[in-house]
Length: 172
Image (tube, one colour):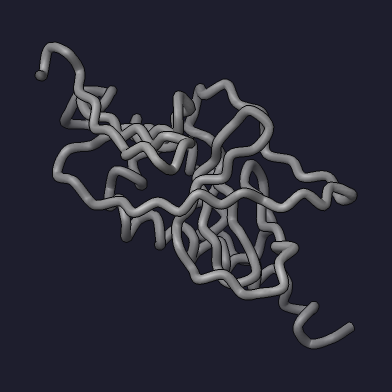
């Protein structure tokens, strides 16, 4: 057993923590206010226990290192918030209540993972983030505001289209 494999849990936890913080850097509390990420926070806060559930860490099948960043991973009818960090990708669970398939990549599945890079900004108001019609980020733990954010940023799958800001009709 190599020294590195003895520390596999700590290395994986490092990737998870870095990925989580990358999204927090991009979205601020909009990211934190999701109850679906409770399992991620539980793992980060309990580094000696492997509670690894509902999120995935996979090694990319690419020869080159990929520049770190936040991405959306479209996969088998779903879309997932993720962070790419050089040779690995951390895929987060979907927001609570979203009906998307659980991300599972079979061992024999050699299909490249599609990475849709996103450039987001922190807003003062909470907002939903969607890829096509699939919700990626849904802040649902906001105590002092409406339970459903008033704004939504829709990122289209077609890279020729621009992202759109959508608003609830009564707020327009």
